[in-house]
Length: 117
Image (tube, rainbow, N blue to C red; front, side):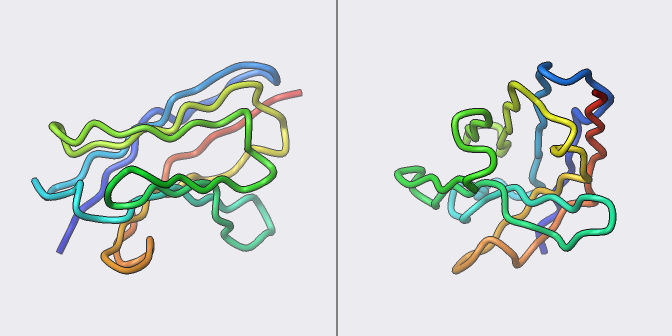
């Protein structure tokens, strides 16, 4: 079982930035596909970005491409989500996820991001 703990959410004005962190309980976090999802109020959870086990491949949702960046610190079993040029429609609970063959075997508890206009 892998525990994932997100941090870094908060309230920010439109156009601002936030960086989310996701720390894993396993020392082999680099062996997992890892990603970020979000659930906006009244909507289904959606994929935001993912990074492959090797780190060679990243996939971004069209809505965040060019504004959000995923990065990893394998030595500390952590991934990050740098979010720039935030928009009110980015308001959501953001979840870290990881898996062996997909991104979704394990989930964090979520961190709230609120973007005011």
